[in-house]
View 1: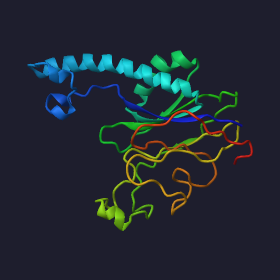
View 2: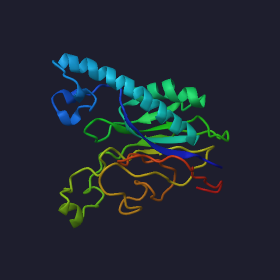
View 3: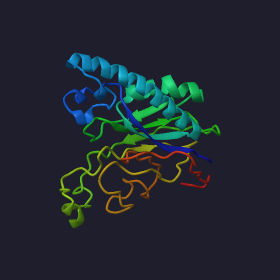
View 4: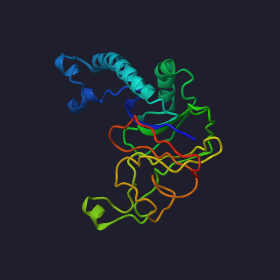
Amino acid sequence: MSLRLATFNVENLMNRFDFSGYRNQLNQDRTLALFEIRSESEYRALEQARAIAHSDDTRQLTALSIAATRADILCLQEVDNIEALKAFEYGYLFKMVGQGYRQKYTTSGNDSRGIDVALMVRDETMDGQPIEFVRMTSHAHLTYDELRLHTPELAALGEAPHERIFRRDCLEIDLPIQGRRPPRAGHGGGGGPPCRPGAHAPGRCAGSGGGGWAAPAGRKGRGRSGAPPRFPASAS
């Protein structure tokens, strides 16, 4: 059994506009800063035009990069919501990869801007093996205290025991491939320290043991794509 798994940061895949730059220059695009803008309504119109033009180029490049992975399962970061994900997959990715990724999953996490982690899954692998969705589990609510992970080092960094570990989420998806469950794989959660495999909470974090297969997603920073993992048929 073979499986192609990729992770990619789609960089602010949003279906809403950010007009905060009108009052906060730190959030203002450098192109708009070149012009004299007389009112908020004028700023909003210009920002909409700029964002649409810029987003089209960005999404085309993102789709090309994702298509090149030929992945069966995609772990994505910085997704606004499921509607934005559907629009991106249908408007850009579908035209490049044919049948595309019919299964899409996301859930609200802890990010202050409202961008979350997500998953896109083919109905079957490139080798024709069916991919089954069993369940999705969010770990966005977990605190250091709940997993007994708080340390003096974290306290020195200003992290309190009651604070949530993941800046976005550690999204766990159970996806048997042709009835078999490959080993757990993933890339951790956004923000906070990395999960400690098997420490105090076996089966909950990326790389931990236990039955089934999980694809936790959400590390802050750019994603990776390219060489896919290949799992032996005897994996359990």
